[in-house]
Image (cartoon, rainbow, N blue to C red):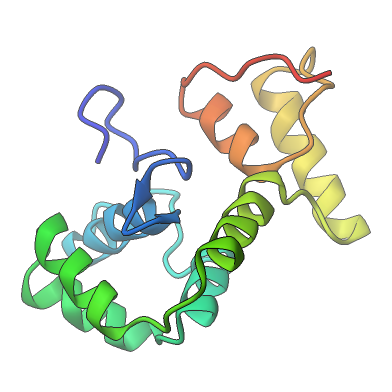
Length: 143
């Protein structure tokens, strides 16, 4: 967890070269401790990371359960995940950080969340930005 905010770390935090991995660890730990609140693990973003890495939620959860330290999970992830060329990994990271709603229904959910948090932020289109804004992180204005 982000000790400053008490929320899972930002999706932008890279671990083993992957965005979202640190956040997924935090959410998995919270589920195992039954302190997840409104957070969902595994969520669609978690599923995207696990699919890209070639691992399953059960494998990941079992690893976090066995030793929830960042170091242990990161080492397991590096050993187990499908290797990707650096350019492919960076493209995937960019996609994850810029991904917005992909269906009309998810656009409605996105807009409802954004309106509840800060309706003036009509510049935001990515889930990562919305998560950071909701969790009190600074999100620069987008042009």
